[in-house]
Image (cartoon, rainbow, N blue to C red; front, side):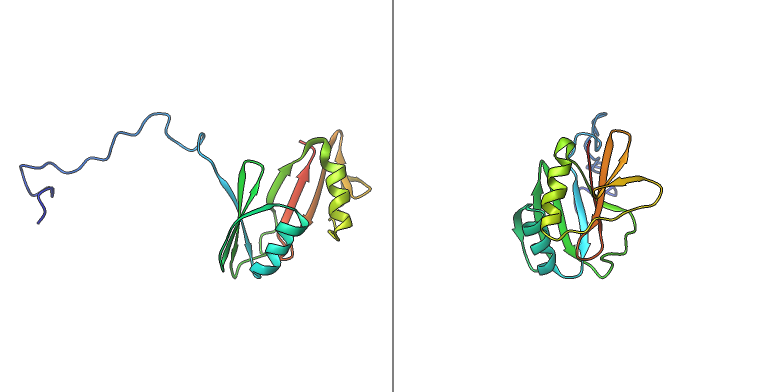
Amino acid sequence: MTSDTPSNPHHPPRVPPAIEEDTMLKDKDSAAIVAVKDIERAKRFYRDVLELDLVADNDQVLEFRTGATTLVVYVSEFAGTNKANAVVWGVGDDLEAIVSRLRDKGVQFEQFDGMEYSEGIHRAGDFRMVWFRDPDGNFLHLNSM
């Protein structure tokens, strides 16, 4: 028995350090994570098509820098099963220029019924948005925020 176990009356049990009242997630960095089936194909897409900076690379996990955020891409048997947005970028007034460059690289954009749509871009008032998929079918979303 170690000297700090509760059965030793001379050493009280260890107490975790006090948790600060403001310690939670609001001030912590987060990362977006996307599952893929083929890591090399994903590397080409995220690095060469989306032009993200590749900052770490091993056999099963890639790490990209996108703005102040980390995008982690990893191999999973569940890749492409998400039917909702996987990663969202607010690109402001650069939306049309980015869409044009992505289209020139072969990216195809989704079109959804019930929304105003012109020149590959959905519109809701002044808000503009597009959706497209990575090679594994993960939804990626750009908007004018």
